[in-house]
Length: 173
Image (tube, rainbow, N blue to C red):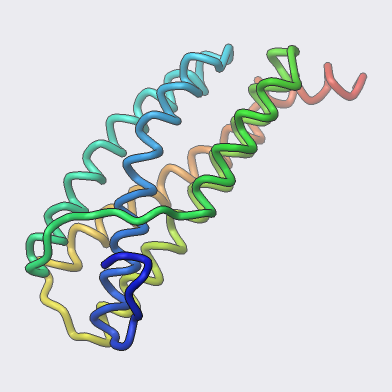
């Protein structure tokens, strides 16, 4: 579905949602690579590397959902994803302190996970209304569950003693 077409049905809406998810997951593969290289905190660096591998699997699952739905996999630009990437690049260019970058990366990763979860929720809501088969929805549900698990891990990292020491250093605590 191109951006010059009109969406006039739930089927069209589902394709639109799926195209956005496909774009998001593909863009995140390279963003996670860049964040893993830029992070200096070992837990973050390893987490980004691991999540990059998971994200490659997410791309494959979205492709399976497209195939099961009977549509060629395709993507559409997503301004939300693009804005997150622009913000990351801007921040990295403005900040030299590694600890500040690590804290930013942690927060950016949590934002991204929440957006991913919401995107999957939206697509699955439409899929439910369309009563789509499990072979379409199961890959999307698997991705959503992995995104929820990743968010929990990130939230745990944000309160871990290692991050607390960064907060203390930065705030003079």
